[in-house]
Length: 548
Image (cartoon, rainbow, N blue to C red; front, side, top):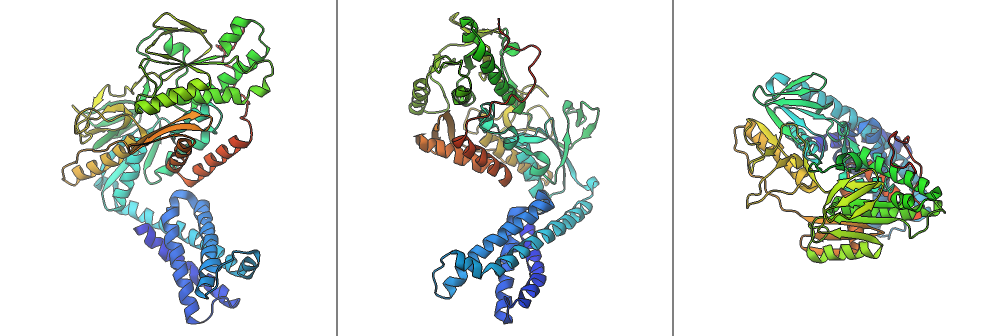
């Protein structure tokens, strides 16, 4: 609410010089005109306070948001509302725009000045708030992990501080950005640029102290977090949100010869590897080697594995025209899954539909089978079938990151066996009130981050924390080639409609307007132009691309 109030103040303050300037051009006359302009300025200021978030977006972004709101205000008021008040239907024509062009200049100027004022006013107010809340008076909170749960917790802590909670929050992460993992497979296929699905943590949680580093150990007895750099952070409450890592179950060769898909580096490495294989296969003459180069195997048919095999299919066939030496029928794609159907998170009907769509495109399935071994140029299944391949992607298992070992919490998100330690996200087994455990999904992690911040604030204030309760809203999976499957609040969708839902919902969840526009631009280009085949990294010394 404070942000809206400062926006209103900035809008009214900017209205005075702009109004005087407009009055000299006879655009604001008499008392009713000044009153109407003041009301307009108040609306623009409040709107800017709501969308620009003051200093969080930086000076340029806040001023740009003001300019945009000024242009929208001109469209809404001068071109639409004013004609209606005079009993004339708006035409939004070039003639009408030309007649109200001076108002456009005034509105844009007012929006820019409002943005500048809001940025500096909120900056001064924020500094005063920080000074007023001396660190010695605040409860020290350390959040470890910069994923969905960790950043959501930090953002909720910021709101609680603005409401008067005396908390000193530090977030530690070994990456300085929040990765939007649902779109990671599209980075691996070249459909999206890596930077477009990642948002800087310093921007997402601008009023939280951020430390870019890796945690070495946690001492819950003396309440200290020790970083690999040697820096020691004391805490009153610790939130562990360190996520998960690939789990290969100790199977021989899996860790050494598979590609994981957990972060941006994994996705970029996989894309570059596939393009190198296509370059090599284009000129390879040995039939056995060509089969290895053009066979792509993915283990695990959950969301990650299914979307990865579909995106790899789209990548290879989408750029095949660049490689005249590769026949369209040569690339082979195999999805291996231990269950009796793919996508166990979906209902049987949608899972069957998904498998039919993938099979119709030529993607093979190996169900009720596990990968038991991997080598540089082959994968062995538990029925002793050997698949010759240079590309093996592992999405068949994850385990909590081993910062403090296995974590189980109570229903209020408190880690068992450790005082004042809380755990959220994929790193912990969080029980459902009615039995079982919450699934490791982004929608659960986001809400767990908010809930743990509320519970810590409650404990600090002497109240009892509440149980975490949340039921999955829906699940979506992209199947490639503008096809998807979705189940939202019990309703099932498939095909193009589900694909549009997938893109629309995930686009709306991306952090920040800038990232949404960049991803939308990438998707638009992908509809018109073929995917880029530029290899963006040097060939690894131990490369699977070498020919025999």
